[in-house]
Image (cartoon, rainbow over all chains, first blue to last red; front, side, top):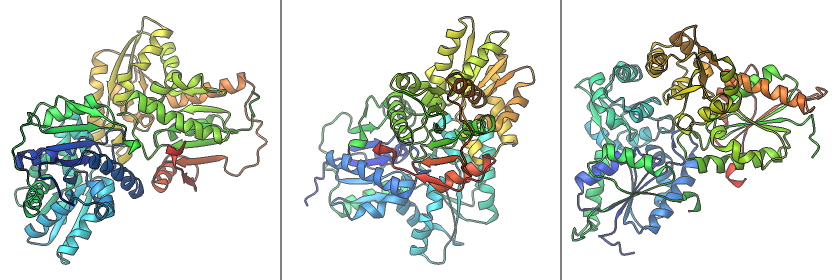
Length: 273
Length: 273
């Protein structure tokens, strides 16, 4: 199959969080077009079973294929954990997950081989980061910690707040006690409270933001496959946004974190795919 | 249609929260059987649109009808807000919602006609409590406040915790400033942090627990229709639990709040209904 270099990148997430990944792609690959899908009707994936998340991911991938994307980024950590391996071989185009990208950098950066991972119950419970990290370096010890209050804190906008600092301190104390030197922000919302996490963990701990690392990995992969955008497109706004519910609320959140005015988010019936 | 008095009561919720309603029915109507459905695959409903919640509710009601229930209790506030009126006329059996029950008691109890309502974004945004309360007494002023962090705090089990007290104080300050004398706990999880809410609001404010009021209203309705259980059943465990996902996790939560050992929670595919 010949891949069209000027086709868009498909990015999907269980909701709005994956916009932090889309944002890094916009910043680091400015000539690429993006089709983003947020599964706002069925968010969150973090508390759902593996079978359910795989089924949802397949539906979204069918939708993105219909949009003729040239590559797919699974921006949702839970979906990366549960569905990436299952869907990879079913597709003719490359698929990247945020978990792989974060794990690669963490394995390279850690000095004492003690890596922390924070995320939702689903992501941390899956042990997927540990599996990737151990494959890269069997000597690495992985300490996971689920932080279910972080997403609602971010969605409330309490990004710089004593309550957030207290909750972050409480969740992360165990990781400090276990003397990790590298911490993977294993949920798309967490980069938005990165400064509080930095403050609590101290300067000695390397924070890995998989959104940023995924954008860099995507850039390298497109170059390697020789399918980077030719950049000759003349679109005013090369980004399209789709959701399964509540398109207006999505637009508000998108406008609060993206450096662009998101004028349109279209609602589709994902259960038809 | 002749209703079988020894048929079970159907109770449904978007997830585990409705178990607080089931618990009040068990306590106050001990000879009634219950079929509970928790839509754990699609939780939470609070951030979904009205159309989506109505569609989900209809699917669940079809499932409960197949279980031959004699009455249905919508234990989920969002589903009561969005779906009760839509489904009421489609059914031959009585349907009760937690919102109606709470509103009736609040309207009767308030002295200064200033009633507060706390709940999810969906419930509070729907304005449904206000609609019911104004119908009962047009002089009542309703002050709504969405508290999206309460559910994850309860699910973390931080029921008696300084962080919870701080967050409760922050959310409820506005209601105190507006001098409400009655507060409806408009989300099924909230009775589990009732003591913190009581501490923050003070003794002067009447807290209305719709779970309890719904059980009393159901009892009165069954008596009035002469379809109360004859109590001659000889079942060891007259309660059945169904979920759309993660049956084991559901069982754990159920066992933590119910005074019974929930040995079985069966997973069904609700999207087939």
